[in-house]
Length: 447
Picture (cartoon, rainbow, N blue to C red):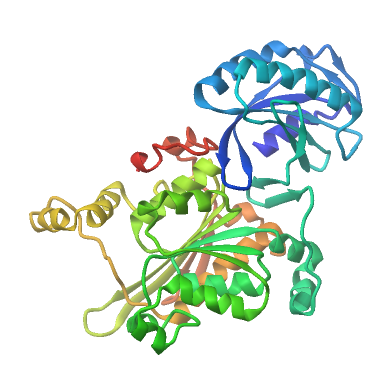
């Protein structure tokens, strides 16, 4: 979307151009979120005036968007270009927005904000929400979830202390300050989850959301960082142990925890929906499927990790493999990439919702058998986690020579000591219609 939009808004003639978009909505206690679902490009030849500092366009183009917004609860976005690079809304923009959005608000007739934005020649976007009383409120962040991850802030926190000095030397001040302003969800806090949390925290991420329903057990101590025998004996929640450890590190990271199964908590889903990045560190197929949906609905980049150890049945290992998938909203999905099948997804859902029925269907061969638990080795888990975090860092600070578009999937075979990367596949046709739809009460029912 961003690539197509830039091509339209900057056709090379040095004059302004314009587009409209329908945006899904999401709202939490603090913020409104606008999620671009579909773009309507206003043809250049239909604009009566196109100059370097203004554009006049046919407002009839708004009619079908207004109808759609009323029917589906969408917001309307107006975005135009500033070919001169002027990094602010102009007086002409102010007058235009008041006239256009007064009309839009009158037609839609609710108190929900709409949004206006400007793109600069380098692709940067800044925006403002426009209330029903025509008040302009700066949008605090605009993000683009592509092969490269872009985040543009109205105002942002900075981090300039001794604890981040070495990180600045490696990735620069801009990247460190960006990490300070990001909110990242880590779903699953065990094998790959705990080293992922550790790496993100010590790289200076400002806010994390930890989701895991389980308590620490003795069998976890071989792979969950910062857990101890006393935690297992007391049966402490994993997320609470890790929250305590994070706060003791001293980076002043804000930690939000949900000791829940995602399928049982709409609150946790809504919290994840307000995050900038998702790391999926769960081995259950249905949870990964749900995270892929959340990524699509809310336009959140999703890094999925998986580790598999195949035993030889005699106490040894035949093969050890790992995979990191980077999922872009609107691109291919874990399902379309073949990470799991619909039949295995059905089995995973049945295990979660009706274990007795799963056992009955498995006994009579009506459903496939799936592995619920597999061996876990911390050195393998940490390696896969490290690849995922470094893949994320490469997308906000392109340090690797390979183009990020070539690294949609990283496959590791530890038995053959081999690593390969794959490009993204064809978009998931089923999920495509849900890109940027925002909050929908039917989300869990779609799975």
